[in-house]
Length: 266
Image (cartoon, rainbow, N blue to C red; front, side, top):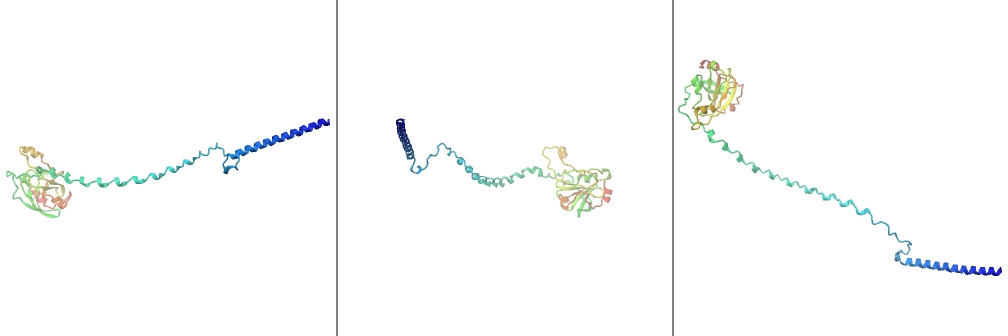
């Protein structure tokens, strides 16, 4: 039993030594492997045991998407230059006075008719005093049918502050109409009521001369008539422009002896 125990003890020791050798070998291999791993690292990194994991997606940083690229400085308002609206387009040269062509006033329209030697002219008529627009006038009296029919026909001038008063008999009291047949000068026509108030004022113009070959009847029918509009029995013809110059208007009073003149009307 002692021998067996000694043999057993010897085997234990032998196995222990072998186990120690194996552990020593393992330790040596482990140390060698660790040494080789340390040699693969750069000199400055030998103190770190583990390499930085390569699977980290650090490069995918959104730093590159900086909004600074959208600079509003590009929208410079200097592009909207108001210099394009040049007022030079409104050239006054377009307002050429050539538009006001005096050719419209054809001389044929303003050419007065020639005096007809066959036309009667009133002469030696009674003259009365009158005050029109505050001014004194000398008026020839046309108080007969013939003198009223002739009127101012054939007269080639009309002196200032002169005129002719037409007085109609009661039977011819009504709306009167005058014309400028055979008249050679412009004149103003003033219609009066029974007490001398102005009813209507006209500026009568010399008509154009009769055309060669034109019918006398048709010519006279074409002449304008100047109406009293209201019934009346007295009218006065005065130099052209006198009514406007004196500022006459409807309703103004003309001072003249109408009562005495009416008694002479035929």
